[in-house]
Length: 116
Image 1 (cartoon, one colour):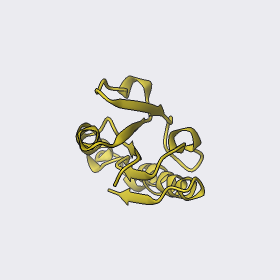
Image 2 (cartoon, helix red, strand yellow; image 1 turned 90 degrees about the horizontal axis):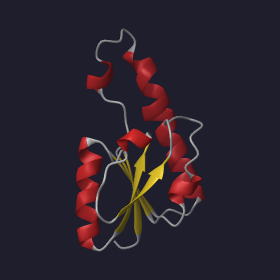
Image 3 (cartoon, helix red, strand yellow; image 1 turned 45 degrees about the horizontal axis):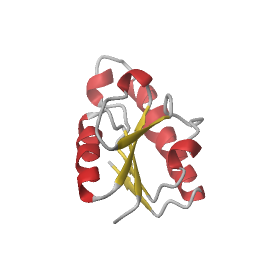
Image 4 (cartoon, helix red, strand yellow; image 1 turned 135 degrees about the vertical axis):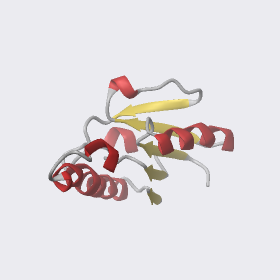
């Protein structure tokens, strides 16, 4: 695979590892992050600030010129394990946010969508 890859969740454990490997494979990587404070320094990456993830997230700038999306963005169990209704915390990001990203990626002509 060649071209530009958008990796969401780029400041997380899996996303960060993927971003560090991809430039060495001859691919241009765009690191998608939700917070400016999470924008880490990594050689060879351009970054796309997308804000909080959900049904209303606008991915259009981040998806421009992208051939493949690797979606690692998610809320995890460890983040909300003390909440009595953790599902209500997860669904806006993990379900609605992912659906929004997939729909916008398809509309932008993205050829591959990898979901973690």
